[in-house]
Structures are given as structure tokens and as C-alpha cells.
Image (cartoon, rainbow, N blue to C red):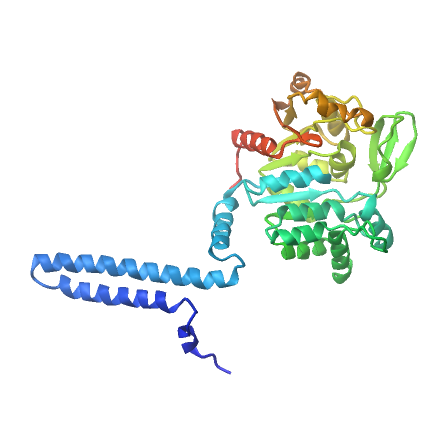
Length: 412
């Protein structure tokens, strides 16, 4: 059945007024053109004025009509349209940033960076073996979805309620107790895509309308293996923190390879950021995937390591900032880092008292030792103290952007 063109003239369409405005402008331009043909200078000048006024009405009418039509398809109308234009026109000109890691540190970082550039790719570790992710790995033989979910939510442009839904955790006594809705959603999407985890992440990205990309570091169902100084070994990310012996070496159970999307993002990157996050269970797991550290080292991107604020008992006891850097280099390549961002502010004593029971202490900012290793170092106040001592998101993003801008060479 053919559409009725007169529906555009129905009441409430918010089109007629702007269509009439444009038509009025056309009439005024035509009338002005007639006046300019008169031999009298005063009348001719008046005609030019009429033409200018008509053109203004035409432009205003067409512009308002386009906005009126576009806002019909946007949930928050004209304000959302402005946000989309800002994102497409301004943020898409930002540097291509690749962030590698896992855990809450990575998601908090990219949540702030997405206001600086929309060209963000989060390469996320999939070796988590605890909680909801661990249970789903065992039952469905998939890679860990938890850190992927956190990054998807952090980059989401979908309504806030959608983000809350993906982070919702079932708590009542049931078969779903402890599971996270986002993890279940990703697991279901994997089944719908015939076991293709990469495609499942891409389809979920569309649901959340994310700004940037989230890609798994690998799609191999890997587990971490830690070898300790006392010669013992432990398998499984959740079991790696060891209170009795220092980690000597980290490896993977399988000969995993990076995803092609991860390698492409690294090759095209202007900036690569490692961390923040648990050194041995978030940052290094990405770098020990076969070919990953070589790709990072080969990349012409500016590479930044963000050192943790506090040590992690069982992983980085007594580690200084330079010890964190040494561990990364020993597990990968000396060229995976160009610069380090280190907190040098002191936390209040009352805040540190809460960490004594966990045997977690501030990471010493031994910046001179890092410089002697050949790396650029920025020591600054990155501290945020609320219920926890951690990076302050705003301070961290400001310091990062300042460092990036100072060394910025965007590929064309």
C-alpha cells in the first residue's frame, strides 16, 4: 500500500512550520530578485536585503526540519543529537589508544578516557578463574567473560539502566546465586553465535552501543600457571596469590595466540597503555600470550605503563615501582614500555591502617631506578582515598592525557 505524502502535514508532526518557513524564504528571495532588477539604486539595495533575509529563513527552516526528524529516532531528543555529533566529529579525531589489562582498574581507566577519544580498544585478559566467570568457564567451556563485561559497560553509551542491568548480580538462594547478568548474557550470546566468542563480544557491543572496541586478548580457554621461588606451582588465576612464596614466573596452560583484532589494534595504535591492575593476574597475562609482547614491542605507538598505588599481598609484596617494571620486562620485552606513570603522593595514615590486616602497602616511587633502566618517568599525585587507597580517576586521566599530548604523534 503506497504511503500518503499528505501525512507530513498532519498536526503534531513538527514539520509543517519549518517547511512553511523555508517556502516563505524562497518567496522572499524571489521577490528580492525582482527588486534587484529595478533601475533605482535604493530599490535594488532593498532587494539584496530581502534576498539575504530569505536565505536565512530557508537555512533555518531546513535545519530545524532536519533536527526535528532526527530527534524522532533518539531517546533524549536534541540533547542526544548534540552528544552524537560531539562524539563523531570531535572524539573520533582523538588518538587511537589501546589499553591492555583486566580487572576493575582497566574498566575505570577507559570510562574516563572515552571522554578524550572514541578511538579506544580495550584488550582484555580472559584468564579469570574465580567467581561467576570461573563457574561459567567450567560449565560451558568458554573464556572468562567477567573482565570483558566490565569494559563493555565502561564504554557503553546505552542508557544507565542498561549498564546497571549488565552489572546486576543474583544474590538470592537459587541456581543463579553469585552469577552476574552480563556474564550470563555473554555466555548466551556465545551459544547463539555457535561458540564464536569474538562475535559474541561484538554483538554485545552493539547492544550497549559502546564507544570504542572491546576485544579478548585470546579466545583460547587458557589458565594461568605460577611458579614460585620455593619451586612450587599453582594453576588458576584465583589461586595464584601466595602468602608464603614470591612469584618467580608466570605461564599459560595452552599455546594461545592473540586475536587478530588485538594485533590489528596494536599495529594501528598511537598510544598503548598497560595497566593499572594486578601485575601477575591482569597485566602480564596479556603479554605472555605468544606473539603479543612482540607485537607491542614492534609497534610505533607511545607505550605507557601505569604502576599500581598499593602492593598486593601474595603477588607483589615489598615491590617498588621499578620492581613492577622489571617483572613486566622479564616476562615480555624491554621495548613494551616507553614511559611509566607513578604515584608519588603519600596516603593518609588512617587510610593505610585499614590495609595492615591485608599486608598491603604503598608502592615506593623509585623513579630514578626506572630512569636508569632507560624509561621516561612521570611521578605525580594520582592518589584517591575513599574507602580504599587507589588511583583517583580524574587525576589519572589528567596525567595520562598530559603525558600523551606531550609525546603525541598520531598516525595519518
